[in-house]
Image (tube, rainbow, N blue to C red; front, side):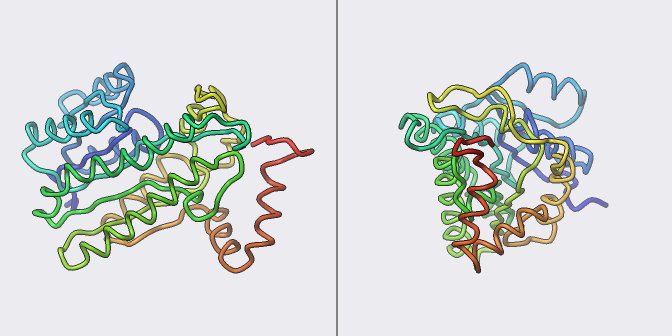
Length: 268
């Protein structure tokens, strides 16, 4: 029998990529799932693909405190409690800092960091009562600053540090706090990445065919929740980057620069 049978799982950003894969996987495992996103049409398509399933959808922008409050309130009204919160909603950017508008960095921070804080704040009383799990979908960029993604890296460093502090605060509560760093994974986050003007990039410069699928990533995340792990870093390249940056930071600077730049121009 699934450990998640009849558990209430909240997934932010569930209309695409890893979030969508998590929603569908948890439904298969018998959980009751609530998810939110900014695109109602995609959320409706997701709900239509699972007729009769215990799936709540809600249109919300997690950068807005009131939207997060309403989403959590709707979840409680529908399902009565929350056992697991997965803060998955996020956005990236692609621009060197010199050219990026400050509003671009601010928007990335508002979604990635404050969205995680808001949803966790409102869901926390229920999760504490159930001795449940809080998850933050972070990034390798939370361990290693990536050029062309300074605001994204800053937001993920913030998520990692905040969740580590929260985990320590809740260490004796029976509640688990887990942050996940997927590495390069096939998802919509690069297509939706902001350019220097804060507009959607609309394309991915990365080779998606060589990346871990969202479905495989979701499987690893669910296993980590089941085992109540502290943190996981996925993909070989992700683990290698974290290792290299910890023990050979100067060399990693050069390797990362070479990976993201060609002839002095940002290409990835």
